Image 1 (cartoon, one colour):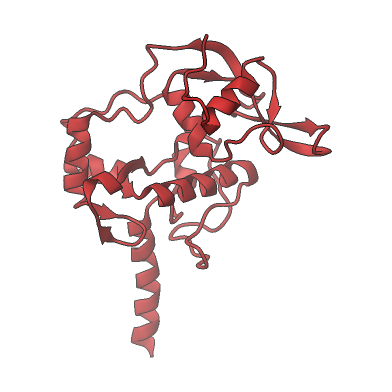
Image 2 (cartoon, helix red, strand yellow; image 1 turned 180 degrees about the vertical axis):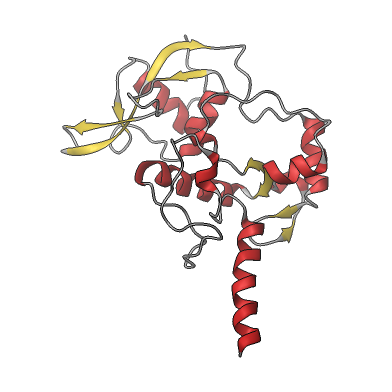
Length: 225
């Protein structure tokens, strides 16, 4: 299989390194550091190998770094043409979602041009056990608000970093500088790594409910004073 990426790109480099189908260190061999990059690879039908717990990475000793690091590995050079994009969002549905969510970026509540907003699942893809079925354009407004939010590219990547760290450490994400969870605390307490209930309460799961929870506490203190 030829390299599916454009030359002189980070992904092109990493494919060339990984095409031997062996585990490679993300610190000293691979250039792609964002969890989102590997999610995009899977969306393209690229098959990544997993560890014993079905994580799409493996923490093993790297003799070059002289430490245990995250490694990535291609399972096969075959790209699955029939693999559905994990987001499962058609252009028509994307337009509907952005309209219902009022073109508002969820982190800083800014109305922005459609092209600057990305549709993101509240429940992070890194915790999905399997690809979801294609989302239908007939989804209700309630279903859309429950499932999706709008983020800029930079905030989407920031969310991915927090979620990947949560999977690795069991410590949930937070709004930078504010350690508050509208349900639970810093500890992720799902029954297994695929349990969406473990994410409820985190800012990156639902920034809107997070604000409501914080406002409720602030307003109570204000009334007492």
